[in-house]
Amino acid sequence: MLPSSASGLPVRLSLMVSASVALLLLVAAVVGIAAHLIDSRGQGMLVAAALAHVLMLAAVPGTVVAGLAFGWWGVGAGMVVLAAAAATQFPLHRRFSPRSRLSPRSRIRETTRASDLTVLHANIWLGQADIDAVVALVDEHRPDVLTLVELTPEADSGLRRRLSERLPHAFVSAAAGGDGTGIYSRFPLVDQQRHDGFVTELLSARVEMPGRPLVFAVHPVPPWPREPSEWVRELGLLRQLLAKIPVDDGPVVVAGDFNATQDHRRYRDLQDGRFVDAAVATGAGMLRTYPAHTWHPPVIAIDHVLVADMAVRSVEAVTIPGSDHRGIMARLAFDPN
Image (cartoon, rainbow, N blue to C red; front, side, top):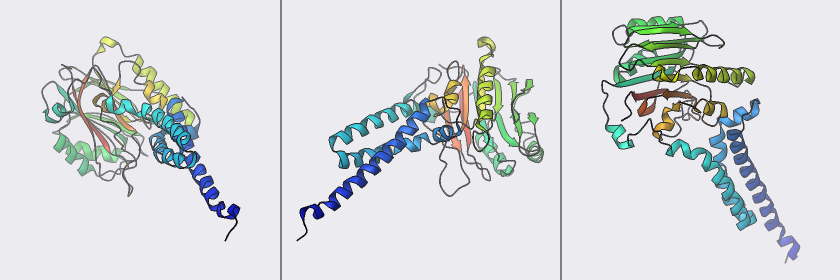
């Protein structure tokens, strides 16, 4: 028979392992919460913010293991972390903006009306996306406006030939290497502007239709693997640009690959004033769009449609064959009633 000290060794070892695992999981969740809250300029925390919702999920098994290792004290500590994590994600599913007054069921049943604006955004991965598939999406969803980033001259040429009847009006700054951007429209585009200060092309134009919305196509640089200061600068510059739009200037739509999620403080700062994320407005949660070219589903939501002074009838992510992103389709209305 083994001495009592020897027989208790496996138990103590098991408790030590459980305690270590619990601490590791809960620390990972706390890092995700901190990355969500902090306006960081460091690359590590910016990457953590992109994956914050994944890190926060670690609080679930962390609480269970903490209970096994520490008893009720462990459960209590885990529940505190869980509550903090839930508080950061709750608005994505429960926030209904005054600009979006339709119930989820009525949004599903809603058909496009004359007072609606349908916007389709896509990152076409340095022009590598299947152009025929993009055209097929336009045929299927009948957007009034299509915004594209990572647009090449070759892709623009192919799209213009195929979309000449569906979206005959275009404002494009196509660049070799995939830094180009385009706005294609069913209606004429006026007040066309190319905005300086951004690495990739950032364009805006007013759509000559009832409501005359001002549409932006944006693509700030990513915070990784590039130097994150460029991302910080461009998100700040975009915020200043949007803040300068007069309140009485009419509806505004900002569609693009923001290279930022709702867990990035600087992206949430864009929504401090008039603007609201279409997915947040409908309570759709996180529409994950990247990466879309891997064996697993997309993990992070970096493609968005921001709106000001419009109702959001519906928003969804759509597949763009050949691209490393999913697209975003938003149906908007000028009259929120």
